[in-house]
Image 1: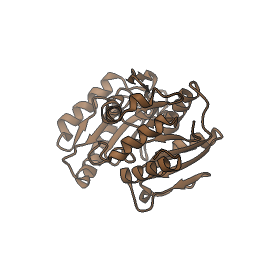
Image 2: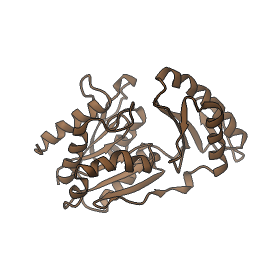
Image 3: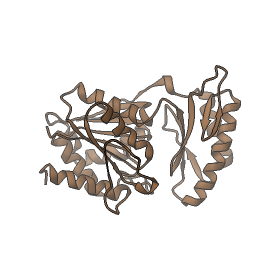
Image 4: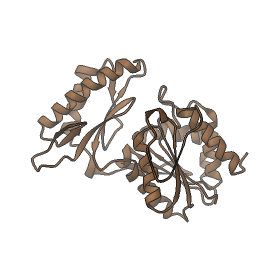
Length: 292
C-alpha cells in the first residue's frame, strides 16, 4: 500500500463544471491506476448516487476499474449529497445506495420546490430528481452563468418564503426562520451551478468521516492524505483528516474564490483550475508513486 489516500470533490476537480462530465481522459486512467496500486480513493460530493454511478463510475469501469478493485488492498467509496447518502464501489461496480432518512425532507416540501421550478424557473434550471436526502436545482447547460445567477437569486428568495411558510426551520444567508420548536435544521446553500436545500448536518467533513470509517474497516489507513475541491466547503474534508491526526494537504482548484487560512498546507496547481488542475494533480502523484 502506498502511503497516500485521496478525497475528491467531483464537480470541478474531476468533472467539468460546464459539461458535468469527465472530459480529460487521463483523469480516468490515473484514478484506475492509483486504485490498483492500493491508494484508497473516495468521492465526496453533493451529487447524487445516480450521477456518480453513471458519470464517474461507468467511465472508470470502462477503463478497467473493476479489475483494479480486485487487487489486494484496493478501496474506493462514494459519499453523495454531502454525507446524506453513500455506497461502496467494488469490483462488482457501485453498490446499493444507503440514504440517511434522518436528514431528508418530507415529500410535501420536495413537491413544493418541484412545482416552483416547473412553474417559475424551468427556463433556467431543472429539478434534480435523483437527489434523495436533499433538494437540488441545477443550471441548465444551455444557460449562461450570468442568466443563471440572476435567476438563482430570485429562486432562493422564493424557495425560502415557500418552505418557511410550511413551518420548516430554514437559514439562507442572513435570513433565518426557526420552526415551531425554535430550531433551524435546514439551510439554502448556493453553488456556482446549483442551489442545494439541505440539512445543516450535511457537509464535506461528515462525508470524509464516512469514507474513513469504510476504509478503516477494510485495512490500515495511510498516514498521508490529499483532499481536492473547488469550493470553500471542500476544505472541510481536510479539516476532518487534520483533526483525526493525519498528515493532510488540501488542493484548491478554484483559488480565485479565496484561499482559506488553515493549519495544514493548501496547494494550488499554478494557473490551472477545475478539471485541468485535477488532471495535473493526478499526473503528479502517478509519477511520484512510480506508476508510469
